Length: 177
Image 1 (cartoon, helix red, strand yellow):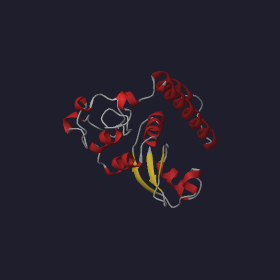
Image 2 (image 1 turned 60 degrees about the vertical axis):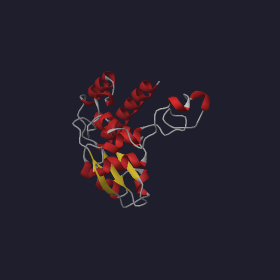
Image 3 (image 1 turned 135 degrees about the vertical axis):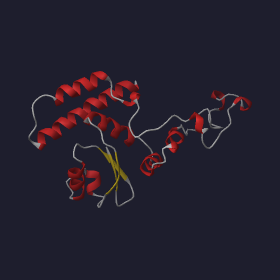
Image 4 (image 1 turned 120 degrees about the vertical axis):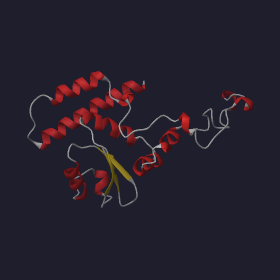
């Protein structure tokens, strides 16, 4: 899993089995359509995984993050990740305002703080937590698809990766229901 900083100061998150090759593709307009229009790009962060499904799952997780959360990961300020993950909606129980009828009385509301106490923050690591892993059925399906025929053509590999992405996306959507 990797994060690129584009010339327009936006971030692109992707995953690959060959980071050097993929970076070269991005720089030579053979990468994603998003980066083709935002060259040059700079590698600002990467994580290595032994399995492509784990890297892809992490890619999708990070793609859903806000800019500040991605920057905390890039800058190594991992203690900020927990705070940045908190709900910022006005109706959230820690935020004053919002839907008054759905909120506890002001006297019963917990104090609003800029950041939770350090002791309340779970340890954050570069590896996704166990709960961030795709369901076992998805992992098994991906393993079966990867252990089949050897791929010698890049085109076949791309098709397999796209298939894996669809399987993981379906599993992620099932977990959200």
